[in-house]
Amino acid sequence: MSAYPFAQLKRYLTLFCALALANCGFLSGCASQPVATSDLKVGDCFNMAEEVLTGAQPAGQVERVDCQHSHNSQVVGIKKLSGNSYPGQKQLYDLALKECAREFEGFVGISYRDSKWDLYPLTPTETTWQDKSERKLTCVALSLPEQKGSLKDSG
Image 1: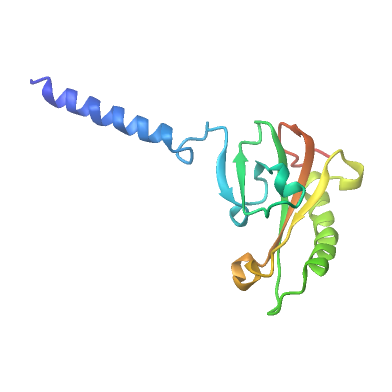
Image 2 (image 1 turned 30 degrees about the horizontal axis):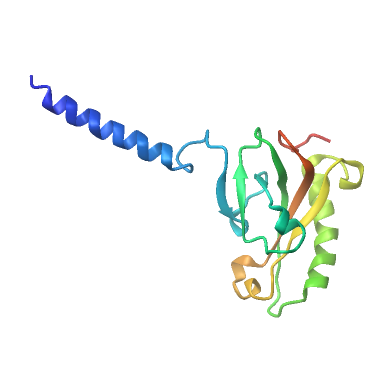
């Protein structure tokens, strides 16, 4: 039996492993993974940049992490919105505080007011409202400094 096929297989395996390690989405052990905020799911942990928290830049993309790693945010609920015309940022924010307070309590098991976490709703902008799939409130539990672990039923 020739060593050539084994050497070729070894090269393919090495290349495959290198590509897998380069692709964080392929491995669960990656520390962080950039993701659009519209793609976040309930339970996702992530880090929100200071520029987003201060309003200096929109929350278009965040670094999703495994909840066992340090993070400052976790999605505690998502509420779909309806309506054809954009209701305005103030109305959306007021609605988000009410709806997200319920989502937080259902996810964590206590009120956000009784927890060490803050409530930070992500709301659609007038531009993103045009896309019906973007018409949702993403309810985020926020902690500064960063924490480790999930808030699910941690009340």
